Length: 239
Image (cartoon, rainbow, N blue to C red; front, side, top):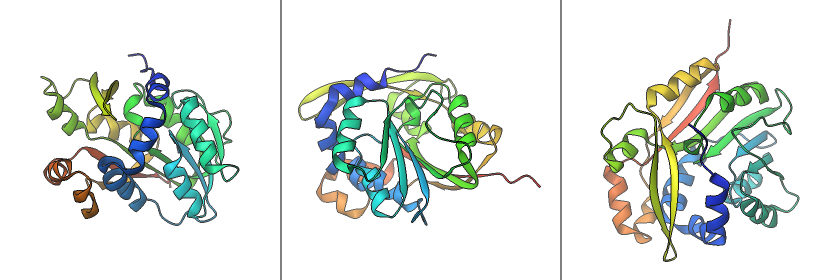
């Protein structure tokens, strides 16, 4: 399967997407609190953020004292991130599915990838690069679509089939088509193991209670139905 044209999605959504992610339930009261909960002790650490978007999480990482290198495939998203961060972080336009030539071997303490991996068809080169750049005691923190939730939501006949799902996002009254890949949890874990990582923490969180005032309907849905999966990986230390 070829990769989805992720840059075009976010270039088209432009600043409407930035405004959405700043304050909507799924991002501000569900995804970001959960991924932050998996990130600890980053003051003075080198963090690589994959798929930084407009830099909302990037700014938090910097404020926590991390030395951040961030990248995104969308030039428009990167322009917003640079306006937000200035010279507080190193920010690149780059494709997660390609080699990360701007990152040296064994230099990164933590990789953070917020809601980006489900857009990637082939995770093998991604995790090969992650293994290359991360230190022996480093970790990977990421969020992605929950595979069972996607399968249930799209009502597909075969959970075990890796395939491209498509949905429509309504942002400020305009509809945007978005495609991403469904893969099983077992497939994810097999890739982690192949590249020498183990699951340190797995979260299936609930939205924070403040989100109920923002979007009561979605809040109640998320109290009973998972949507995203949150994982922290550590390197397997060979004896």
